[in-house]
Length: 375
Image (cartoon, rainbow, N blue to C red; front, side, top):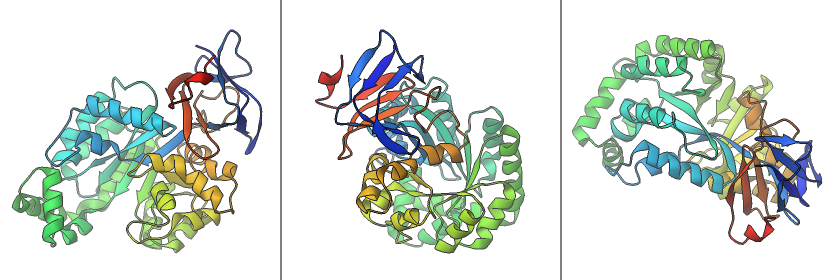
């Protein structure tokens, strides 16, 4: 079906201005004859949001410890939530860890299998967050990368911090509950994972080689030092995600690399872990991409919070969730409103509420009270 979105202020070429947007055959067109019309008068017509890292789908897979739902069912829920947040391309942060349960190899494979018949709406892609000590899953991860089932490789290294946290009985209970094992079993698994630390660099090299052969981007996660960034840069990871120190972000930007921080950090006014505040770093050009991280709605709200601070205008702030992540991921066909690109559009009120979402040229979600604008 063809659509004309008329009367709104459209984000094109880095600025908001009057105009219409036509969608036909899944793309942005120069006009759409015999089209249905969405009246966007008084609204903002923005490129659909591109989420480089969102793991809120885990709550659809496991809303409570030891309460699991099938991956296909959970991903339908995840897709609907993404659309309601204006997200038209979602890189699901799928953690592949040595932990049983939610982040295990069977859960990873089930997600890949469910994505063979993806739910309608947003394009769901896989951001494989591979834990450094997960030697048992290496072969399956390499096979998934080679088969084109992984679209972004992230290098995670949470095992040392997990082992430290497990000394706290409360944390031990939380991790054991998520994994569905006893506390003693989880401690034994963590100790076994730590026992092969010397072999981690070689496996990282193999993973990086597979990603390069498949032509997918790579990112490093939670870089604490300049040495960390240098290590992952040498592996080919051109995206620095959630740097733990400002000099790390400065170093990545000096090298022309994308730097990712969480949209919840912007919306809440700071990191829930006490790390750097994303908004001022973005205003200085040190953060170039915002990700939903653990909360999809924050990605829609963050550009408006940024604009309200008075340093970046809304067009520049919206680039943090649209064109910049698309560029970092090598997605030349989305993230902007221009003829020939994917028909991914978020229609938003000036206050930041989503009125409608178009995915691949089709109306995929409409907010309460906006149905009267369809003609």
